[in-house]
Image 1 (tube, rainbow, N blue to C red):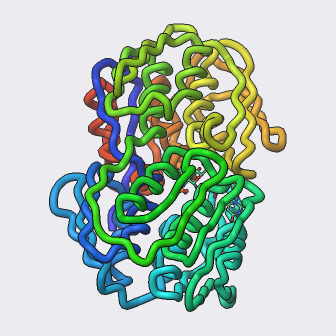
Image 2 (image 1 turned 30 degrees about the vertical axis):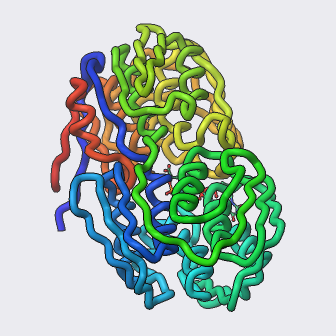
Amino acid sequence: MLLEKIVVEKSPPLKGNVRVSGAKNSALPILAASLLGTEDIILEDVPNLKDVDVICEVLTSLGAKVERYEEGKIKINSVNIDKYETPYELMSKMRASFLVMGPLLTRIGKAKTSLPGGCAIGTRPIDLHLKGFRALGANIDVDHGYVEAFADKLIGDRIYLDFPSVGATENIMMAAVLAEGETTIDNAAMEPEIVDLANFLNKLGGNVKGAGTSTIRIKGVDNLKGTVHSVIPDRIEAGTFMVASAITGGDVIIENVIPNHIKPIIAKLREVGCDVYENGDKVRVVGNTKIKAVDVKTLPYPGFPTDMQAQFMALMSIADGTSVIIETVFENRFMHVDELKRMGADIKIDGRSAIIQGVNSLMSAPVKATDLRAGAALILAGLVADGKTEIDNVYHIDRGYDHIEDKFSQLGGKIYRIEY
Ligand SMILES: CC(=O)N[C@H]1[C@@H](OP(=O)(O)OP(=O)(O)OC[C@H]2O[C@@H](n3ccc(=O)[nH]c3=O)[C@H](O)[C@@H]2O)O[C@H](CO)[C@@H](O)[C@@H]1O
Ligand SMILES: C=C(OP(=O)(O)O)C(=O)O
């Protein structure tokens, strides 16, 4: 099989309009939650991503009927779920496959998947997911790299999450929706994707209240049906194009955004000296020739998203002055630093902090996407680096960016894909 690289050439300031796709991090849990419904479910604005392909394969392998009938539209029918085991091959391709545990456990009383394991950004344990399932009465065995969970009937309980984990909040919410009685999740994650999942569950006939706050209450119902649901816009894709406009000194209008979801990104871009205008579901980012250095600390929502940390670091690499970026969500999310340094960035790591001394210009180099957002950061750096930047391990980028070269090209970015 041929491998692919993305080539990015120094580009003029980006200009024009770009439409953001549906959010990966909403689409994945909502697709997993589609295992809960017993009638047809139609999802709209589903992004065209490798991760979506994988979760669709997982659903099919469990016995669901999955039909992708139009760009962005997927029809799912899970009435005949007859398997409870997610194959290792699919689990190992994408951690979010673990999100089928909660729905399977509550719908058919058992679930088995391989342990998701760590990845380039950290060890990423699943203890909080399992703590939640146990609190709801599930028996859990972890053995030979697999997690197996059983329960005749889950019973609602009060669950405190030691950290507001997005995935654990989602998995527990999905398990509780068909449990007996009421479940309360305290210190729940408050991300917009949690709200989207709760809205979807309620449309299926569930009773979930408080999503978007730190306490979520779920009253179990007997069964869930079908619905039509549109996935919310991807705030991280939006943020990536906003930084692209900033780094190239461009003027880009990003369409299909919910400005409330990107407040920290808007605030930081204003701090660096960009003009940002909000207008309904559009934001316009007008870059400035001089980017000011600013400090950033990643936090759970509504704080600055860890999924924008690498892209912001690319911007700070050419800022005027020194900035400090502190990563508090993942313990090892600085793999992009070495790659940015290959392009001439001046960055030092001290524990969970990166100290970035802005340089006047970046230079092209052969680099590799160590994870999804690292890949995005390298594209951004490549847009302003002298020469041609060749980015390897493109499959990471394809996990989470829909039609990435087309969208950048439409704005005047010089970017294309080659096979080797
Ligand atoms: C598919 C999806 O939606 N992915 C997002 C989701 O990942 P994900 O749901 O995996 O992220 P979590 O919020 O669960 O992880 C945050 C932190 O909690 C820790 N943790 C998590 C679960 C657990 O049981 N124990 C534990 O210690 C993790 O190791 C990490 O340090 O939220 C992250 C944080 O916003 C984003 O970067 C990811 O893009
Ligand atoms: C870390 C990310 O995703 P995942 O949780 O799917 O690895 C991301 O989207 O940046």
